[in-house]
Amino acid sequence: MKISARHVDQSTILDVSGNIDMSNSPEVRKALLLELRENGVTRVFLNLTGVNYIDSSGVASLVEGLKASRELKRRFILFGLNDSAREVLKISRLLKLFEVYDDEAQAMAS
Amino acid sequence: MTPIAAKQPRDTKKPSKLSRAFLLKLELRSHPTLLCVIRGALEPLMETIGFSPEHNRAIIRAVDEAVSNIMRHSYHGRPDLPIELYCNRLQRRTKGETEQGVEILLFDCGPAVDTTKIQPRPLDEIRPGGLGLHIIRGSMDTVEYKRAGRLNRLRLVKYARASKGECGSAEEKSS
Image (cartoon, rainbow over all chains, first blue to last red; front, side, top):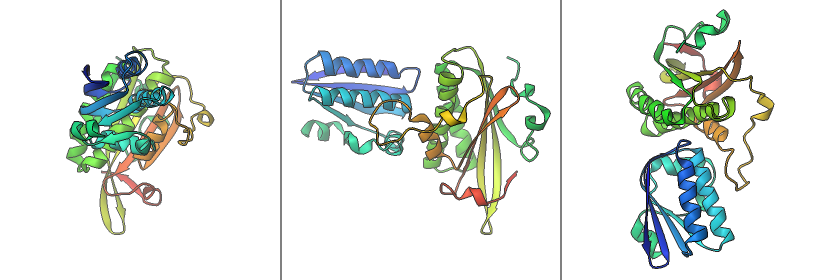
């Protein structure tokens, strides 16, 4: 799995590729919380276009990001989810809690 | 690595209807980086059996979560302990039609699981963690835990055409 960050105005886009499971989900959590808490951006986007699989530990990292964003009154936005990622969030009844967009253009325009 | 299921008592080592129909056996250590190996092995196998992409993803999700639970809870993060996965093809007759299915057995050598303590947490709580069991149950038709001698055995079953909950009344038989 790889994570890289792009900074656009007051936003950060975290591009993730590969699979997110218990072997690497702490890296996702760390990157998310760093952007939300320490870099002073108003919006953090998580680009999951390149993610084939995400497990419950990955979902837990997303939930931590969501909670931190709410505490800090910042927006945490997901886009580019494949069927697998949507399904795991749906089963966990979390899909409706996140701001989710199909692609980057829609997410940035939100 | 010595097969751990070989250590189980005679009455549970070879379930009477299933023992000759295993499609796949994996023996691996409890290192999280091996989760992708399991997923990579199961995906084409489930395709071969005839599962739809949606059911294929459900099976992989459940097995991945189950193995993660073994690594995290049964082995407490130790990366060098044995896990075995057996995959068996199933068939059943329901309403005059034959349905293809798969049974996955997972064995680990961890301490016995207190089943009263492995209930899924309520999903109306927005907090990280505790989702694995819910995901497993939501993805498979049958989820059964059993202590087999000194081993934990988790049995997961999914049928290609069944919707969740249908399989309980049907007769299962190995192919």
